[in-house]
Length: 363
Ligand SMILES: C=CC1=C(C)c2cc3[nH]c(cc4nc(cc5[nH]c(cc1n2)c(C)c5CCC(=O)O)C(CCC(=O)O)=C4C)c(C)c3C=C
Ligand SMILES: [Fe+2]
Ligand SMILES: [Fe+2]
Image (spheres, rainbow, N blue to C red):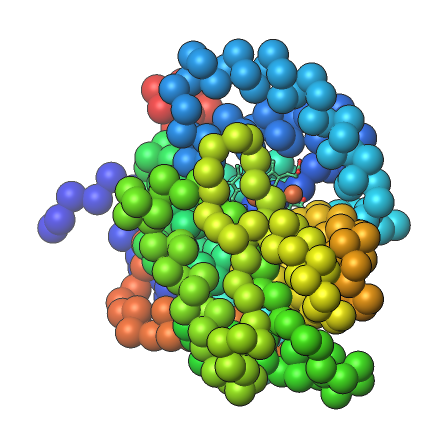
């Protein structure tokens, strides 16, 4: 007879799979206090700011967190909705829609969402999934292009949670889908829809979030993946090279970031007599501060002030059905081939662990 100290542990159960959609995060409220809390966590991430910690601590706490929260809070207030931050609302909606679509396709998969910074945290969602008996998790960052600053930071949060967890579920990660045909087709349809109603621009500007240029030289594939997304989108739309421009936005600090920069490019276009630009932000799957405020307000103003006549912002994919279909395909491709052997009974294991801890067992 094999030794079995706790018979319930040896009974297997079917695997229970979950998808965790991960996005960047956003403040809880558009107030300086809430933005300060959010930025303090975000900008302390070594994946985001690579400056040595002791120097960065003084810059962050001595300068940035004194002034930026109030400025950023005012910007957040300008895009806030009665239900909260757009980024959170779209992410939540995407999770709900993906759950529905996977359900229709007969997948017994739970879909949850989490934020890398702020709430709801990745660790708390993974804890909740485990408590629900989930044994396998597909982590799907809502960033189509891989960047060390964004995607890898989500992976860090998952690994950090796993490093503190005894019975770790099976984990799979989606690192990128920048060239997924469904994602490109959804982007192209959104642009075509806009053009059907409003006609075509002189220039289509594809604006991606920037990162420091040194990350490109250090082997981060982000720049190449943005360029590939841009090229594929242009091909789908039948654009020639002189009909579109790919730019990078949201530079922070004085270091060189990926170029060309969005706003200076738009100003140069306005000055050069370009009458109408349409701006699309393919790297953002949800509308957020960076698209609604920085592009649709600040960049619009800059272009029109420089002599441009018309500025059209094409919204992010948000809850677009074609995008949700693409997300569903990306998820299915990564879920396929996951062996179906029985899983441990996580709920029994969890109950056993809780009981042992209550009896004073060391962690
Ligand atoms: C799409 C991918 C993103 C990458 C890559 C990225 C890199 C990156 N970002 C900062 C600094 C800031 N980003 C901010 C907002 C923000 N960034 C992304 C996405 C990426 N960032 C999103 C979706 C958002 C919007 C969040 C929202 O709540 O709507 C901000 C905060 C806003 C502000 O105070 O201006 C900062 C700061 C760096 C430094 C970086 C790479 C090094
Ligand atoms: Fe950012
Ligand atoms: Fe910004």
